[in-house]
Every structure is written in C-alpha cells, then in structure tokens.
Length: 216
Image (cartoon, rainbow, N blue to C red; front, side, top):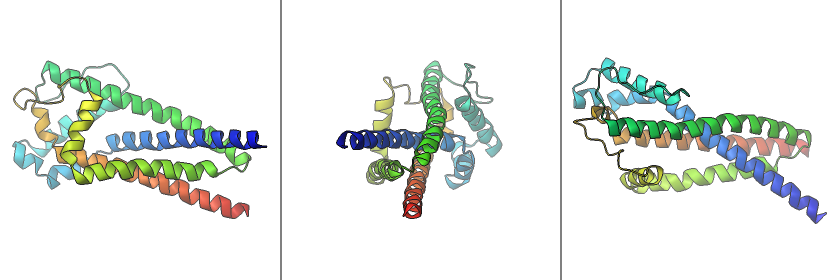
C-alpha cells in the first residue's frame, strides 16, 4: 500500500515538474513573440527621442531581431539599417541558442503535458495540479523579489550565468542596436514572463479546486 502511494506521489511530482517547466517555457516564448510590449515601450521609454532614430526604423530592426530569434533556421542575423560587430553577432547567436532551448522545451512540454493531463484525468488524479500551482508560483516570488530589490544586479547576474564571455557588453559605437534595447525594456519582459507564470499557476490552482470539488 505504501509502495503504491509512493509511486503515485512520484508520478504526481514528475507531472508537476513537467507542467511547471512547460508553463515557464511557454511564458518565455510568448513574451519573446509579443511585439506589442516593445512597441509600447518605444513611446513609454522615449526610445526614438533618445536615439534619434525614427520609430519606423526602430520597429524594422527590432522585428528582424525577433524574427531571427523565433526562427529555427541557421540564417545569419542582418539588421536592415544598423551595423553589427563580430562579437555582437556571436552574442546574438548565443541568445538564439537559449531561445531555441526554450522553444524545444515548450513544444515537448505541451505534448507531454497534454498526454499526461489526459491520462491523469482518466484516473481522476489531480494532485499534480496543486503541486504545479505551488512549484510555478515559487519561481516568480524569488525572481520578483530580486527584480524589485535590485534589477541592475539581477540583470548582470543573469548574463554572467547564461554566457561565458563578455560579448553581451555592447559598445554603442560598433553595435548601435543596444541603443534601441534599453535595460528597462528587458525588465518589462522579465515582469511579463513572471506574470504569465503566475497566471499559469492560478489556472492550475483553480483547476485543482474545481476538479476536487466535482469529485466529492
């Protein structure tokens, strides 16, 4: 009996971990693809005024960068109206590798989660939803505190962890694209990712309450 219970708990934990990673990965990819956030920041952060570039030029170069990061292809990044150094090109290739990882995780996670949810529903097992709600809200709480306390430190720390070089430190003279990508925009991206993860946590929590109440 105890063995069956342990196996059941392990199964719920694995399912919760898969679903949590799926929520995080989908949130990252969704935020990457959600261009209206940047379009809003063009005005909100006065990017056009600060850089002297037209809004059309800013959007055009940003769209090319996002298309590059969303693509699974091996094409090289070429900005339509901004120069780029070799170190800048290498950095963007490394960034794309990270996003590719999240995209693969999102695709695999959605498939595994869909199958898992179907199988667990047939057995009327829903504890994994509660566990996912807890797991997925823990990360936003920790990261949210870091962002709130010291965004600059969190931003730099992330880059030191994610990259083994300093190519992410752009020189505006050789890589002017950094002028249209202010740190505050990345903070907004981080907050949007956290908000999406919290939403996923709430959905799982509400689904667990609904299913357990219906089962009574």
